[in-house]
Image (tube, rainbow, N blue to C red; front, side):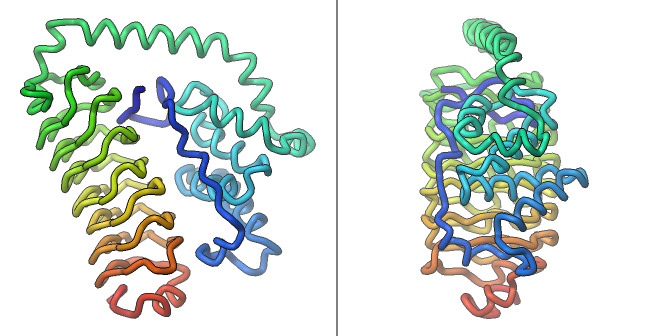
Length: 344
């Protein structure tokens, strides 16, 4: 299985596990803020998603499209919108999990999309699929060739399965298959823009990718069980992060100072969030899954654009100044749940 740290939304392969199988019950809507002037959350989320996308705010639009898909999986608009975001408005259908999302869309009430004259993604997918499959095969062959290249492998300093240092300057890096641990500071301050993992990677250590200014999107593979403090801190151009539920604790400073981070997906299975997102100035919306039982002090402090947070567990504990400096629309409800100390 391959998973990626990559630049942009046009991913070059796909994952074997889907992050889109989770479904929310409508009873969970109590954890989501929405404007009650709309007749339903469905109507509100659809309006917000389309408005944000048409305004050029793809990342925040994605959060609303995804919530539509989770709450109303039979309604086409959520899946259609997620594909819209990843494909740059249906220009590039070759991206991570594209076939999984197409299958979800196909099972929905997509006939209503056709009635609205929405882009017929299914027809487009069938037309482009042979070219997509050919391109993926060529990329897989190239990656296999790189892994077998002795000169390329000399760029990796590794010992007993630990990648201690990367000495190259390639923007795209394919991790050797004998690596199980990305060591402390292994890629720190490098120009890497895309990382191809494999199924043997189990741990990412402290500061492993800190200060990597070219990273724009990351998808941590579900094989990873442990991640170290500050692993992606100060990645100034990082926009999107996908964290699997196999990682039980998100450590302090995981994304500290990632000023352009706008889209974060936390997988069900994560139990604890530390001071992980402080200073993520562009983060506007996030969902905390029901598996999370503790959110630490200052976890989202100085996230100045954070306006929407949905915490799905009634019994979660929240630390001091967890939301300090945010502008949450549901602040009153959160103060009632966790006390003023969560903000001040």
